[in-house]
Image (tube, rainbow, N blue to C red; front, side, top):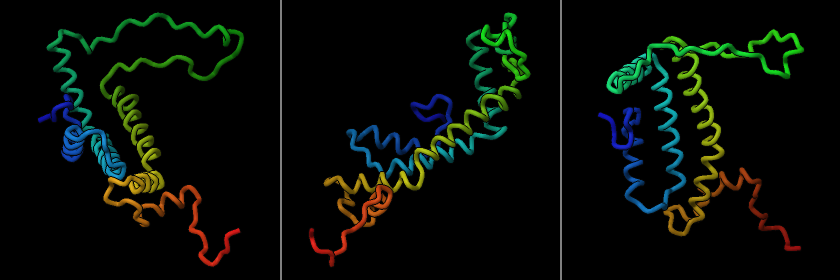
Length: 173
């Protein structure tokens, strides 16, 4: 059963729970919990990058097209592609135009999987371990947060930004 706000039913239960929890609160999102959400999204994307998930999405899409009286099996006619003007005087050995995606399997391998893979890479880049340390450090700088000025939460952020503790033996200069 799809969660509300998730018409395709692709959302993991814990993601739905967090989304529901956050929708009740004012916009005081704890940044450290964003890492949990990001991990859950990456896990969902990993689970969905499978033949079974693709088949489920394709079947739902086919049903929607049938209900809307849209023929999704017919490939539209394409106009004859012209090489770009700036390349007309050159010998080009690389493919300039895209080959049309004409089958569900081609759509899966040439569109669906690459999009899932790019999403996962971007999520991992944005929510890396270093970014998680910074997020927990930012939370620890909020007086309303339970970890306010907690050294364990602030250390990863300080390390990321190259901040070190002053030497107590050093004399002020």
